[in-house]
Length: 125
Image (cartoon, rainbow, N blue to C red; front, side, top):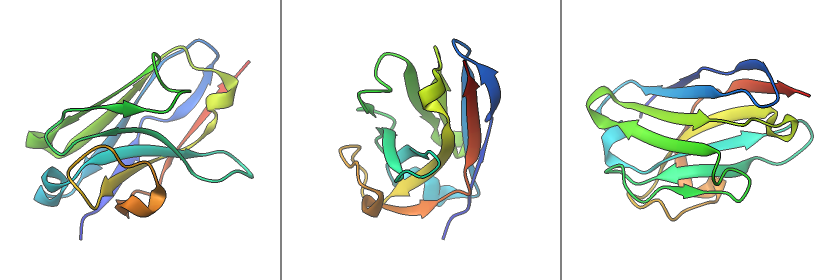
C-alpha cells in the first residue's frame, strides 16, 4: 500500500500558473509510473499526464501538451505537475495516481492502482 497526498491546487485567473505536488509516504512510489488525472463536475475522470518509473518518457493529453510539465523526484517520493497558461476548461479536481506498470504509456484509470484524494483547481475567466 502507498498513500498519496496532492496539494497545490487553488483558485486562479486564466493565464496563471500552478504547481501541483503529489507526496507519497514511502518507497513504493519509486516502483511505478505516475500519472495525473482530472475530473470536472459531471464528467468522467480523464488522463492528463504520465511519467515512467525512472522519470522518463512523459506523456500528455492533447489539452495538456505544451502547457503542462510532469516530473518526479524519487529520492523524495514526490511528483509534480507544473501547469501554465491555465484556462477555465482546466477547472477540475486533479488526482495523482501510481500505475500497475513502470512504463508511462498507460492512459486509462484502470491502469493505475493507487490514488490520492485530489486537489481542486478552479480557473476563472
